[in-house]
Length: 104
Image (tube, rainbow, N blue to C red):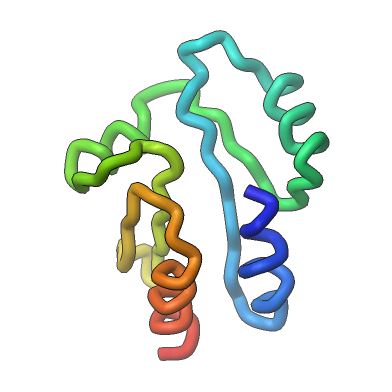
């Protein structure tokens, strides 16, 4: 997760890129304090949401296959259209997809 800050957020700060992490594991009893501590320990400076109802993560997993369920990277364009989903972190592929959306 810290890689997102250095590889995407900082270099593209001049664009309208927004990065939001989503913790889908609220069922394990994690709370805001635990997530905040995790973010602090990893020096994460972008928002992290905690799912409390129907899982957006589960909806993505129902529609996209991959070897590893964590993390799921999603790029949503300015019009709210999902343009990219990956269930394994591949920074080069993610950056290519991001550039396609940012600079169209």
